Length: 153
Image (cartoon, rainbow, N blue to C red; front, top):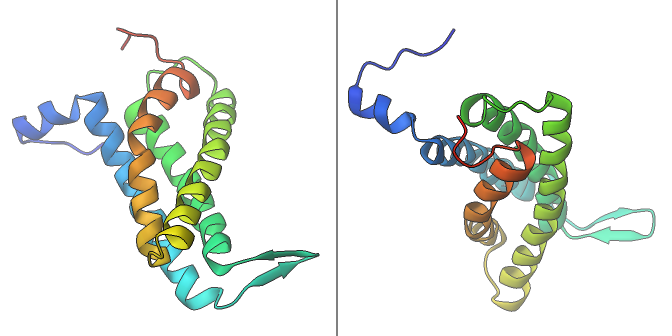
């Protein structure tokens, strides 16, 4: 059941695609940051070894939180921001996942830079890294993941 917005200023604001995108990614960001914090502090409290690979707890926390964030962001972006996309849901998700997969490595690079080089507290480094990549994601998802042409609605 759709939410009925009565306030005309809010209604007008929510007609703006960019505003809706940043609201939806803001929710995804909160999911990411909260999951990262709890996984980092309460689930993985030491380095994890899988086969011969070692994963520090900041990296394994990123993997878990980013996975939750991808699902949340895809659903919100598909239904709240780019609902008028003509691509099939399958193609949207595959494209969204490809962008997110590349974004994961950009986030990992940012996390490594802030934690290892600048000695930043990992949950704070995760927040700073995610925020710094947010603007580029709007354009990539609009024109690639959901294939929205300029001027179409």
